[in-house]
Length: 122
Length: 164
Image (cartoon, rainbow over all chains, first blue to last red):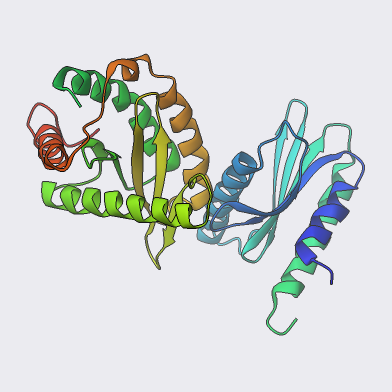
């Protein structure tokens, strides 16, 4: 029996340039599934990405922009990409030489798959 | 815990607890010893509330340790109770002298993940405090009541203030 959370993480982490991927409970800020390198703390990434996405979602709604789809953070040596999937978020840690457009597309695809998997009756 | 030790300990805990409250965006925190002695608090307005929560924390701690014994595990990392509007997080803080318990109440401004994450940092900071190395905990029922009252008197005195 397939696990949609692990499937989403596995697919995303195999995209070139993605060094880690997580599915996180957005409200609780805790990991549901993850594939990360040992030096990366899933607890920290899940908590902070959940808080960031939650806050930015509120800002988006209050600004009349509607539901937030993705958040992308750029840093010196890479990116953090977060895609909303209802009560979940998909987080990708991306190196700076990755094709960020492809990662974004795959993250959104994973988010759509998770939304579908979370619907009642599925 | 001896008075001189207590003063040093409370002073040493103030900074880390304030940082935790700020970073984790929690509403209420309470740091108690295993005997119920209140070492630090943030967010309470009355000693009655502190006493109730400290007592409940001590009993929840004892019950969960007993449960851990039944399950033949060494202990627990934290307990989390999710309410519809507020959530409670209780976790043991291991120090060189004795195990303390941190009680945290938070709402939607924070999350379990944030609390867990910043609790980990707090635990590391407190574990490394040199001020803890000379203090000793109280060990009997009489000391429990005395220490609990002493802690309440201290944190709600004009000098002690209501914040950790």
